Each structure stands twice: as C-alpha cells, then as structure tokens.
Amino acid sequence: MTTQEQRYNLIEEQWIPVSGYGRVSLRDIFSREDLSALKGSPLEKIALLKFLQAIAQAAHTPSTTDEWLALGKDTLAQECLAYLDKWHESFWLYGPDPFLQMPAVSKAKKLPCAALQPDIASGNNTLLFHSQIARPLDDGQKALLLLVNQSCCFGGKKPDNTIILTPGVEKKAAKNGPALCSKGLLHSFLVGNNIQETIWLNLLTRENIATERLYEEGIGIPPWEKMPAGEADDVARSLCRSLMGRLIPMSRFNLLDGDSVHCVEGIQHPDYLHGIVDPSVTGDRSSQKTVMIWADPNKRPWRHLPALLSFLTHDETSQMRCLQLYWCIPRIRLTSLQTVTVWSGGIRLSNNAGEYFLSGQDDFVESEISFPVSIFEREGEDWYLAFSKTMKDIDKLDKILYISVSSYYKNEKSSTYKEHADKASLLFWQMAESQLKNIINFCTDKEERDSILSILREYVSECYSLFCPHETARQLQLWANNRPFSQKKKKI
Image (tube, rainbow, N blue to C red; front, side, top):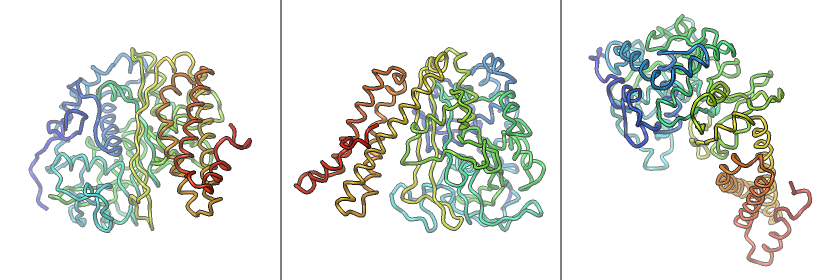
C-alpha cells in the first residue's frame, strides 16, 4: 500500500453525529454552544464521550475541584481549541501518520469495514433486517468506526494475529475492547445542557486520579501525541497504566485501505479482573471476586441506580462505584445547575469459542435520568436510602408477578412458563419506568411513596391479567388461584 497524501482532518471535517445537526467537526464541538447532545449508537456515544474527554484532559486537567470550578466550560472549550490547533497535524485521517492508525500493519489481511460494525451482518452473521446490510462508508463514518473499534471492538479471530510488532508477544483470538470486557459493560456519564458543558462536567482532576491510585502513571499522554510502535513497547505499557489508555486504549492496530481495513490486535489492556477499569463503568473491586454491572437489554439502566449512586451512603458494606459519577456528581452542587442528568448505556454480547457477536437476545441499551441537584446537597444519604428501599419494594412486586405468571402456566402444564413470566416482568418494568420521576422526587415522602407503590401494584395485576388468559372456566380457575397478592406469602 502506497503512502497516501494528507487529507480529511478531523478537526475541520464534519464527522461527529449530533442531535438536530447531522454531523459536525471537532472545531464545531468546542466553538458552538448550540450543540446539545451526541447522536449515534450507545457504543458510538461511549467512544465519542471518552475521546472528547481525552482531548479536554490533554488540554487542561485541573488539579483540584476549585480549579475545575474556576475553569468553567467556556474557558475549557477555548483551551481545547488551542490544543487542537497545536496538534492539528496529528488529526489527519489519511497520510504518512494517519490518526489512530498503524502503517506498520499494512501487510495484515484486509477486512471489509462492515466486519468491524457490530450491528451489520457480515461473514457468517445472520441477516435479520434490511438495516443490517453493509453499505459503503464515507470518510467521516470510517473515522467514527476507527474510534469505536479502539474501546468497543469485539473479540475473536477477525483481526490478523499473525502480525506481531513487539517481539515476544503471543496472540491467539483477539480480546474484546476494555470498554466491553466479556459481556458488555454498562457505562455512565453526566450530561449537561450542551456538549461543551457535558465535557466539562465529566472532566477529572489530578486530585481524583491521585486519590484512587487506579492509574499508576496518572493522566498520561494521548496516543495521537505519541503512538506506540508495538503491542508492548514503552508507550504501550504507559497507556496500560494511565487514564489516557482507558479513554483511548488502542486495543486494535488498524489501517484504512479504501473500503477495507487492515486489522490486528493491539495493546492487551488489563481489565477489571486485574483491578483496572474505565472510570465510567460500575463495579465492586474491594473483594477477591470482582463484581461488575453489565449492560442488559432486559434490565433498563435506571434499575441499576442504587449501585450507580451508592457513594451517597456512608454504609461501608456498599463498595459499588462508578468513579465518573462518584468524582463528578458531588461537585455539581457548587455550580448554578438545578438538575443533573446521568446517561448510561452499553451493549450486551454473546460468545462462542472465543468469537463475540450479537445473538437474538443481545442488543444496545441506554437511558437518561435527571435528578434535582438539591437531592445531593442536603439530604443525599436520606434520599438514597429511601430510593433504595423503594427500588427493593419494586423488585418484590416484580417477583410476585413472576411467581404468579409462572405458577399459572405450570399449573396449566405448560413448558413455556419461564418465557411468559419473563415477558410479563419486562412489561411491568416498562410500565414502572413511567413512575420513575415520581419515585426520584417523592420517595422520601411516605404518603407519596405509598401512593406510587399502590400504582405499581395495579401494574402487577394488569400485567398478570394480560399474560394469563381467563376466558374459559378452566382458565378462570387458574387465574383466580394464582393471581398476585392472593396469598399471604406474596405480600410485600
């Protein structure tokens, strides 16, 4: 492959999807306050949020919360623009030193770009919908694909692992990107009134990094400033031990070649089993057996709020942490913001013999949840304890529904009782989500809380009747015998 001329600079070209505006450039992101939110799949949002955070951390990482507050979103945006001007030549998508690419892997086998898109049918993947048909990508789409493929790449045998740039490195089937790990991690970020505010709200301080001691080399250097020459050289090892290596992990060494890409497994980053995680994921790493929160299409992210916000309680038995929220939410009370919004998203994936893919049960998941800032100002722990208790009560209601539907179909001698119970439970949680705002705002008010739970009990009965037919005499008898709340042991 011959060296290409420099073209398509990511600072000037429009390639970042934004709600209401199509695609914009990096310069637009940091110069326009009318850009409200990123658009795209959850994986694209995760990769873009991490990328924009990496630019901001490289431009100005404040030492303390006071410095972060004094910096503000406007000054941060100006410093990011100055940073992009300084490193303008590092953001060419094509050229002798292409952005986040490795010319050294030009002899690796070529894959169609569709092979790196999780929601596109390629190879042996089954085509289920017309939207899964592979289509040619323009340069902007290729740039976004490269970015996503560093953090959120699927493991397996697609990368050409016969290419090894650091002598002594062993490769078999490629691992998932560190933003996914084995099943697809759930990520959470704060969301502001516009993209510039979102970047500022998620900016970490040196004090944050030093306190946690999660990244031995601190903030680190982004790879566009200094690319690794191999999988385990000094630069690669530094990325494994720094925040930048989690934001832009370089877990694949790619090189665009027309409508194809040369793809090789890159840096093998340590994961949560080794005690190192992205700040945006949630897990308990305090014991020998690490427990993580995984993306689950059957469990909307709001159901994980007790884990995501566990830092609000002083209960030392609770060690679940999302560092991004743990570090950034408490300081919002120092700003003029009246509400804080948490975005959570991810993807669940399956594997077979080391090959990772989307099965019929897998999918993207995402949600945005807003809270009054006053919750975190005065009564954070009281609110958290009341909210957690309410969520436990809702879980009990769900269990009552599940048992009732299962019993109905078991007594009908049906082997599909679990399928019916799962569907009824899913519908219940969808209906319960309509009450989320009330649960957040009124869970500390006993009267209001009881009223909300009363509504949710009605949802249980509605779901039960919907999934358990009661037209014939036989069905009516089964329905009456197994209906929710009819037995003492099923009461909450």
